[in-house]
Length: 465
Image (cartoon, rainbow, N blue to C red; front, side, top):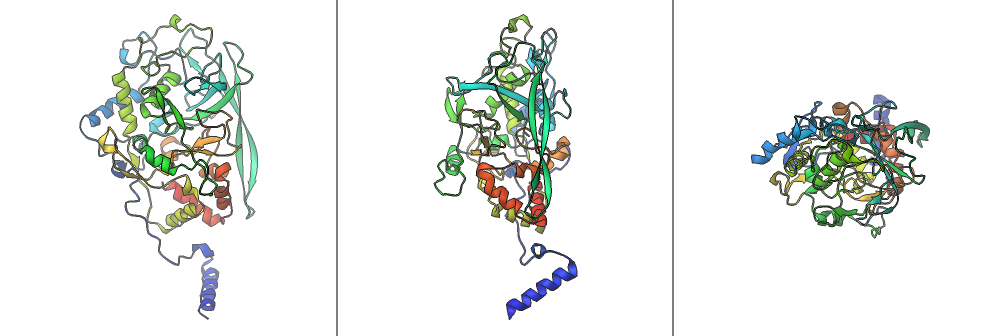
């Protein structure tokens, strides 16, 4: 009898108010304690266009001072040699950008070019051919090296350019609604130094937002290994694994954490690699210029044997490690909390792990913080549709690192777009979810089987991160 009365009341509410069954709140959901503090004590509450650019509020002493020097080195343009600005000369001779911020605008996320021929957008093409070097890195393309560089100094013929053609495909939800995904197809043209290898492997990579990197570095290896289940022993269909990569400082293999395939072990090495590959700036870890086969780099002026000093690399590393994490918004709203429940019920949190505690770090502000990055930093098979078919150390051509989700809802505010995934093909969070396959197939299907209202709540939750 009681159940019959409840059913009558439910039907009456739906008829009177026009709401669906899932809109009716039977119990009040509550957020976790301190859930808004995504970066622990490094959290900043700002929703402006500068949301990704603040210093961690708990940074102290010399670290606080060095942050601003690192900020300057990160944001200001490097120039060609010779120049009176000796601390910032040595650009090129081949490069993709003139400053770190050219790709990470306002410490945010890059995008694919809006039109063919556009420069300084934040997407580059990594190049390789099958096989590996002794370090485990993939073989660079024989003429053009590890990435295509679409800019050069005067008197140097630029390597080439690339164009993108998008192919559309319609996705049908079980409830009858549809949406459209786009698949990018890349063509490299205007090659000035010879034909590219017929077996070249092309991996497009978009620059990611910078917040919270030091906190990710402060997660212990034990924690990451506890997340890993490479043989899927628990039978949940998810088999995350760490990528073991070459650490140039220790000259040994260590767990990778940074980059789309977790192919860099430390922030310092990630930054040094970007200086070399993206700006043509040499350093202790990457002392060699990038020049196409047959081009003598010594024919062009340089900024010295090492074009960025160890001291300045350390300051950029400090800056990149201690950018504050934007706090969550609307954590106590019922619609957001319902979306969080759908997110967890769909097993999205199996890879996008919500809460982690950091261990020790050389920067005290990053140690022992309870953070909410929504990542496990592990590699997962994401299926053939997203595959770049380019192995990277122990990552296969189908595997990608779980991207952190913190700050995702502010990318549009900071960078003026909502392009996601490794090549920016997804124009919305919804499209990014629909590209998931492989180990994430069941989670994607769970999302697709939600009602429109439920999907909207899940997406609103992700936008609150």
